[in-house]
Image (cartoon, rainbow, N blue to C red):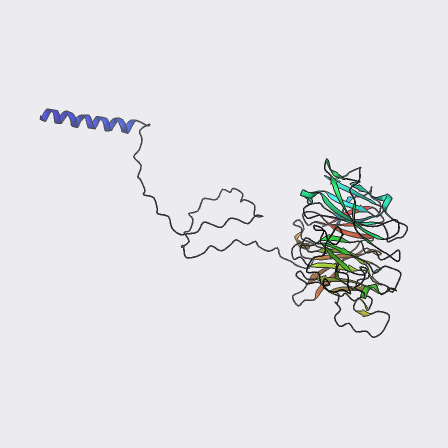
Length: 439
């Protein structure tokens, strides 16, 4: 028996020695019991626009355990600092090939759509101006006066799905036409030339003051800027007459039809229950709104209104406004009584900016810069004068007033500003047929 025990002990020592020398031997793991689940809520997902973090060489940190009773605060985006812009530079991106450009916009992608007053819409894509126009309505457009022609295009917010867009032009009779079109289903760079459906035809008594601006607001409705009908001094009194569509900002629903029209009236339009007013009207008292835009961040509406003999002006309508503003024409020109030394400005909106005709003759409204490339411009609104090419920036101050400054004497006939899908800004030289990027 002792000899058997001795042999057994020697065998065990030999086995242990073999395992210690064998590199393939499996080590015995220490088993940790599972931790019971707690009521700690799962971490909040990142916001949709937040990009995944890039990998780094930093060591992995041990996470801090938040007690279940303490909710995890939602992530926040750091706001971009906003300061008055000190300067700008104009960089040409299209130096030729355009005839009297009057508007520039995008269709939710990288292309730029440029409207020519004689009746064509052209596309700039991948650094090239395409040879074929997106749309040609030259045969339908009247251009026998300086302020007639094709003025703007507005792509439906769901253009990527429905292919619908809208244009604003004066027809052969000189009247304003707002019409709907479809893109060619087989070619995204061409519109279907037979797809026009006319929503509105508005009589124009004279050849000037046709407005021409058009844009979809944050609410999905189509806004249309209308001049007072023309001539001088508003001889028909349209600016203060809500029974006409002239001298107003219109707001219509293009997704629903009603009363035999290809559009309907938004139920919260300010004159919807007024039998003495046109229900399409959103605001009144405009002389010739030459370019308006929505701040893509705040939703505020900026309107530049061309003056008569002395004053050019710009207004801002805060997001959330119920509408119904009266911008003063033809009681006021800017902040000044028009054709009289005494007038009652009660209930009339005052401009945030005005300048007299020693600095120019016709204001061109622009946009609030919300791009990402030139952050020194962020939060500034830009406007210009068509005649002199002066470019201003407007910046809101904490007390509600506006800080304004001339940033550039460009010498261009600036017919419009434009905004691309990323919020970068451009301006158009009407005489030179050129497009510049603002940097």
